[in-house]
Image 1: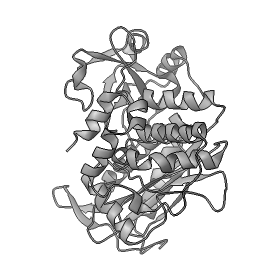
Image 2 (image 1 turned 90 degrees about the vertical axis):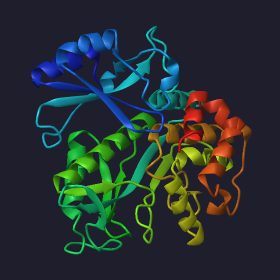
Image 3 (image 1 turned 60 degrees about the vertical axis):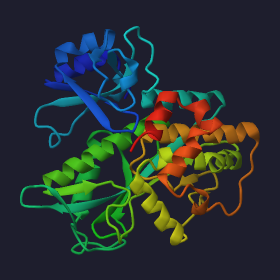
Image 4 (image 1 turned 90 degrees about the horizontal axis):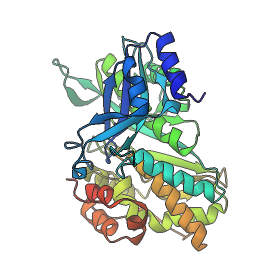
Length: 375
């Protein structure tokens, strides 16, 4: 249920909360956080909590301190096995000292995209599907590249050694009001897949961030290492991030907009050099199209090109803006739109994004530059 600032402060007192984690993200989607005592909540809600942005990717050019303002609606209690001390987490909006939004705040970018869709009468719903590997750790606890099991697609225990871990992940997420609808062993050795239930844009991206945190924590608790790297093993399938979109009126035009702009979006959907090793494998295997309309649900669009290195907030924002452009321009879907249409290298993807009028119109310059200059 939605909280107000007053209700959050009352809740933290009733639950004897010891720490409040104020979470946000750099422009590449890497999580950042500041923990405060509950007694600082009133200050956080009214004046914000200042932090130095100098060492944060995409933030350093501001030249001034920034402030975190917690968003009450996102207040959630960490499960006991995630934090021994009672801890709540809230996502934050990032603002300048004068209260204006910071342009590099990727959650704010998604919020504006979602508002643009709402103004066009669209109630978009999204869900994600992450794959990840579980690797063993060495005697000192450092990650290896030895898969936790040798199971294959849809195998079950005892071949699938990760079934219990997947259950723990899904139950921990449920305690944080993040709901999943499917989990399974995937195609690679030690590789797993979990799919979320659908939600609006902001909660879908928020839930993706919670999911990745829970996966890493659960793996560590079992003496393992979770990897969301796009291509962690050279001779095995890579990790993907599939996005399902529904609720778009004029689905064909929305879909055509994504097709049209996907090439220019690729450096954001696939931001690492390893991402292109995965894409190359998908091209050579002649895998499914990078984006297509579901055969089972004619109003559902599936993006299969993205990988877990993508910032989910910027990813969803770009998909929304691309789809809206498709509707506004009355675009029609192209036939035979395969992986070969996408850039072959990260350098090529950066070049397309850098000269794209579409990208320049929907993303702040500092966000674009952070991706183009990322090594």
